Length: 256
Picture 1: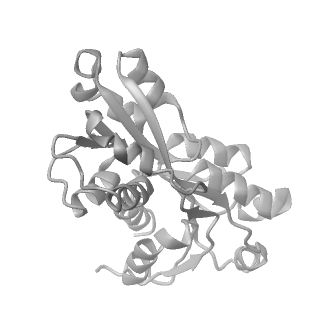
Picture 2: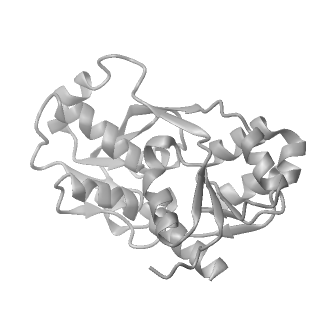
């Protein structure tokens, strides 16, 4: 390790269950990770949501996982009820989700080599109209979320079904320690990984708190999230690729 983040305090806002890898990587480079989770990731609210899909899993041609959370919660729920059908291919929106699928034993995962959103995935030949027309696609995701993927696949002739396999909930964190850290000049950067998290930070901190955080460089994994930041007065934006490794590289490049 280079120690490029020595003396730097990085605010990590990922959900608690996902923040460990980022925090360890920052600390391995000599930095301090200040945890301030803005979202909670929870199992689906309805009991038995997996059973009807598990019973028909053989009928699908492709299972598309939109996030690593979808991989963890979706596979846990389905594999508790049955084995994965040998002919059911899997796809992911980015390499982070693809790595999570490979960690579960899937050798072949359809995912973009670069890019980490629905647009990048939909540009792949595997999702061209002639490739998906008449195919049954299961999209595993959290509650709500963007509709672009499903709507585009349906417009290209696929039969699309959704499985909401986890929930996102705004965390009710006390912003006082974070704002005090920023006021003392002891915070060096802020990492925000979702638009929902940005909105929750703005809700918790309020306009005055956001003004206090505005001096910090804010690291985000997508231009859409950057736009949400700017709407709340956070204008020093660094857009990296998605994932813990990409965040670490961006931090080292910025501070190193």
